[in-house]
Image (cartoon, rainbow, N blue to C red; front, side, top):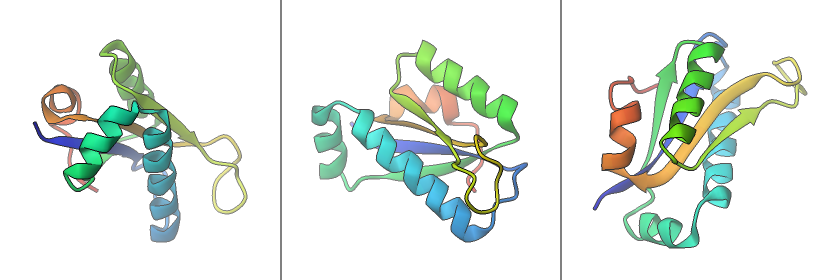
Amino acid sequence: MDMKLVVLVRQDLKLPKGKLAAQVAHAAVESVFNSEKSKVDEWRSQGQKKVVLKVKDEQELMDFLRRAKTMKLKSCIITDAGRTVLEPGTRTCVGIGPDYDDKLDPLTGKLKMV
C-alpha cells in the first residue's frame, strides 16, 4: 500500500519561499519523530513521498489538525519562534503521517498543492 506524509501550510501568511521551506521541513521532521518506527521504515522504503497542501488560514489549519486527531492519524502543529518574519507563536503548518494514502486522502485529498 502506498504511503505519504502530508504538510498543510497556511496561505494567509504569504511566507517568503525560504521561510515556507523551513516551516515545511520542521513539519516533516517533527512528523517522522512522532510516528511509529514501523510506519516510518515502510514509508522510507517507498521513497518518502511528501505532499505540501494549501489551507486558507489558522482556523482551517486547526480544523484539519482536530480532524486528523479524531481519525487517529499522527499529526503535529508547527509554531514559529518569531526570530525572522513572523510573530512568536504563529502557527504555520500541520504535519500528518506518514501513513497510508487511503487513510490520509479522505481528510486531505481535496486540498490543492502549494
